[in-house]
Image: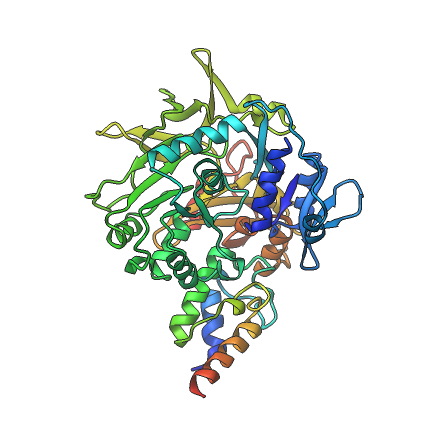
Length: 436
Length: 83
């Protein structure tokens, strides 16, 4: 079942309905372009799509059946709940992420994989029935396994941020305070806005006792703000790609100096991590490992590596070990970047841009900037005659084909994209130009 | 203060270097100019720059999707503040 909904009560109910029925849920953000959503629905062979049509939540058959309104479905007598035979290795969820070849990839996570992280998190952070958790990430983000399934496992309360205040840091923080939220889990970009613009830095959420962040590096200054706001709270940096969910973590000590981002820490007990000696790449395995990519056997085969008879996912992240034995993120081995916690394959962006007939060639790079974090710049070759495209048109083209978070920040029009001696795009040169 | 220029200046500085082609009805959110994290920053800027407070119903993609709509919301809030 594909859920094209923001993180609402209906969506959460549908997740548990899917799992109880032995089905797999596939969450997709409604802000995705319609064609991309349709591609995913077709790719994963969904039988039911939960979506909003004309302001009404409805269950639509993906094969032409008449849609059923959510309210009507609730009002009709309950059917007999199926009692499917379910094994731990059966798929629970498929999370679609950016794919380097131009189409999103579906990461298949089993019940075992999701449960491994959730069970550990409950013990590690002492989550119980009194917990009130906010996780302001869409359902399609692996972060959302934390609040949803700790609710199921421990009886914790899942506090959903209403959609109409999600863009207003002040209201989100006020809402979290009113709901006496005790645990927070988000990407650092969102946490930063809550601390700086929403008043969370003023300590107005006194009940907060656990603050977790993942998906990208938190800045030293944001971490310092957080520490000052909730000095007694557990603060932990969780790390792991969608393919493995969380595999390492670092509890930030009270005395953390805040000069640099914290390390990604050590392996969670359910995970196994290795560092490839020649490349420095982090290899991650263990119980939370994905089953594979949906309908992509070749990509799946390429994603894993066998070491000592065990499967590991090649994260593409380069790491080093610091003096305390903690893993520290150094950089990527490929052209994948994280912006605002969202994963972006620059190759997918290039593929989408190259579909515009006015674009003769394109090279996309990401650079780190002091105040803005990751900035994505698209260099567009328009030929010697120059092109008629404007920056707005390029952004609109991207917005029509890709999720909003993948739209490039900057566009530079050039006669031709620089290439090396073998004709390949010279990304080092582009990065240098992007910084100028 | 020129509300229109202030808003336009912020959008150009943060999201649309050069501002070429940006007019009052250019779709900002649906047109891929501002994403959701960018929206958090824009709302905070507007509140602090104009000394106003948004209410929940006022801030979504429908209410702030172009410069004209943003300006109208700001002018309305400023008028209510003075009145």
